[in-house]
Image (cartoon, rainbow, N blue to C red):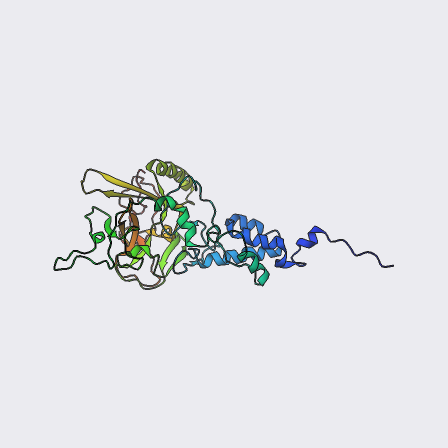
Length: 371
């Protein structure tokens, strides 16, 4: 009489050598892992060979595109300095206002649509009850995150079918194209959400996403830096400075925390304060954009004491209450040239963070001011 077959243990069922990626455990893991931070992925990868392979696939995918496919072109990381293949943050292609619905944006899916080569795994991923937006894979997800920004508009806008500037013979053109005077940072006007023209309107340069090839390169002294991956013509739109729009009170609270974290020299914030002098000359509009946790590739643009090769422009869109801070090429930019701009000229901390811009007029320390 033959002995009964051995009972299957739970350990054997989860053993990748027995079932591999077809096992429901690893199919669920393939859905969860893209939501994990680098530290969490590193911990998971130590548990078994299959999860190690899944984590490696996610890390490789993340290093190939910082924008998570939110932009028109992939923006890869390049690092020959240390062991970090990419920088982790929540990606938003435009500025957002944190709301009660999304008080803390801590996670976003960042990984390939399918982590497994077999059709059964693809079926599980595509058949998930989670929508693309909930998976963090489409533009709609960030549109919902920024819903409070999108509602901050009025109904004013042009009714043009084809927007043009005022011609030389004084024919009235698109009212959205009237430029305003400015002190310091430049200002330009664009058509907005309530206008009759479409996204292909020539007066929506900053609203069609990034149109030039960029890459993020690791530098020994500066850390991550944004570079041109193609020749960029002077005056061409490069990118917007995206992040969380904060009140001045919240900006000051966060800056205090960032200053404490930066005291050891290993933390760098991306909180940018912009002041727009109003036409009356008696008031100033302060805009606080924090890209430290939530932002886009503009968070990697470093300072240059010689003003750099990017100009900062406040873009006002018809009907929108708040402007967008955008970068345009201030000169022709060569391929493989680092993109930089001036953070400002005020330095209230003589012993502030060291500047490594390398320009002939370098002050030695980065600009700083009282937030």
